[in-house]
Length: 324
Image 1 (cartoon, rainbow, N blue to C red):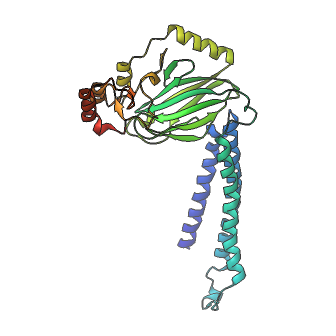
Image 2 (cartoon, one colour; image 1 turned 90 degrees about the vertical axis):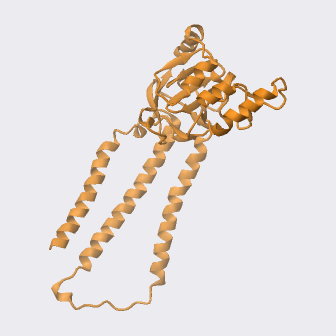
Image 3 (cartoon, rainbow, N blue to C red; image 1 turned 180 degrees about the horizontal axis):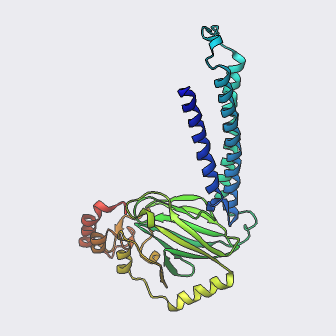
């Protein structure tokens, strides 16, 4: 009797967990997409949930049936099941079913992943807005190379226009995620990944780092403001006219592990350094690199105007910070 009560309690507990999870599910941002990429992800999630639900129902039904049918009873206390060599048909069936389930889940998953790498359908004829998103401990830096402006911890985009985020990191590996608009994608130093998004509704959306990277991970968040094209152009013009200039020294300071508020500048750090450039071998500002772990401007072997002393000093100070 005690074993039966314990078993019943376990089953009820599991069911309550799923029911409570379902109550919170409706409030999750991913279930309220505001762009075509997020809608594709939601379709994939719903497809997966349907099959997961069917599998759970079948498994639980079989579990209850088998436990009840083959339970110990006074009238079968001495029963011993006959020895079976095996049933080839049953073995083929229980091998084929998981294979079919994997295919059913895999095909739409792979298709969706490939779709997310392209400009969303219906927006192919528009020129994407290019934004470089650079992660650093613990802030997000957004550079608009065509508009020559830069923001920290917030990014403005126009609605109904594709946006191409070029993702990299100035430090540890992190993950760029705007749940209402897209899936997650890693940012890595000396590498560049790309992410297309489109916001088809005006509004403010939440973005964050979803890859643990130290004690400041929790607060590493940013805002995505989707504006009308007219409001976006007005904002760009105001930034270009009124925002202060970002200097190389200021940028080096901001790369230090810290939390920052929202900041805006009328130029970008791309004029000094591109953290995605894995071809960069040397640095023009070894003192900043030594103090802050910031590489400064890069140069190639064709730049012969740098003397050997600076080059040697750079090697000496920068050797332990190649990951930055």
